[in-house]
Length: 193
Image (tube, rainbow, N blue to C red; front, side):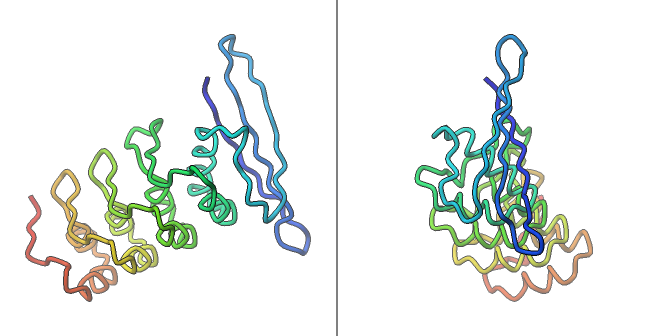
């Protein structure tokens, strides 16, 4: 069975968000699609759909990619949510933090970095950490948030040998380079291999 998630945010006018609609597409063996919609009221902290962890994980990944900050805030409080699970259907197997960093969703990155269970230094299949992704894409605010974690390792190399510092310097992201250099544990002598 294959699950796809579409999340829509319904803003109240002129008030803030009133509710979310979560649509689950279940592929059956006979290729017929069954659509199930759930309206989740704004502020609801119970987003476990069918108590199916795989569906909840898809909501997590989709919300990180699309900037649904309030859904992420609710999901990080769920019992059993695995914030470090890698997206097995993506070729590079990123985590939620990788996805949020790539999408430059700074508020979501803040929420995830502050979650007690997060492993900020997990790598994708290519060896990229969330910090590397932020440096590669020039996302200065994400770099600042990630570097605020006491658990951050600034010197993890991607599989091609690049550190986040080398990547930022090579891409001419000088503000990121300057920020990384403010940390004494940033190894400027680590060569690119």
